[in-house]
Length: 168
Picture 1 (tube, helix red, strand yellow):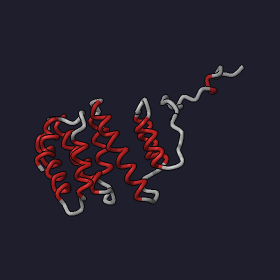
Picture 2 (cartoon, rainbow, N blue to C red; picture 1 turned 90 degrees about the vertical axis):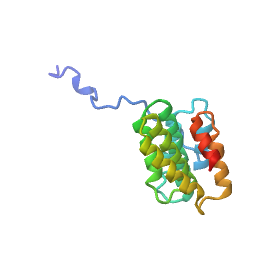
Picture 3 (cartoon, one colour; picture 1 turned 45 degrees about the vertical axis):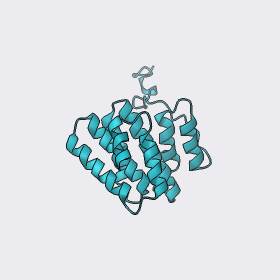
Picture 4 (spheres, rainbow, N blue to C red; picture 1 turned 60 degrees about the horizontal axis):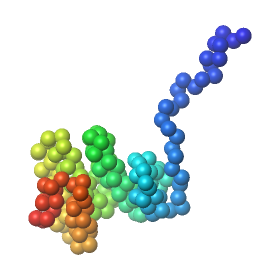
């Protein structure tokens, strides 16, 4: 018999993570719709948008949908009180200088909400000021300003954010 007694047949380094269960769609828009409309609305579905249609591989469309997915993941992680992962998702948007101004603005507002949760008033104010500058810039279209207002009206947004956006 073997000295290892079958021990060598087990992969001790196998991942304990469940296998990625999301099926790739034909387009990034379909992948995003799958995440948005899924009953479970899991982080895995949002991550699939980025995994299957990476923002660095070409089109502005991929980058935009990745930004939307990162923003959704930031909201989800913050609701679960996973501040580090929420901040990481926002940082991905803010560090991408080719990200559309609408998503950068929303990411700054989301960062302000994160900083509010962790009781960091200076960082919260800095994020609010950045968001306001972007919101009022020439780069922001009126339809996009309306989208920011609609985003702020979402029931999950804190009252201070809804009030703030109503004032600008």
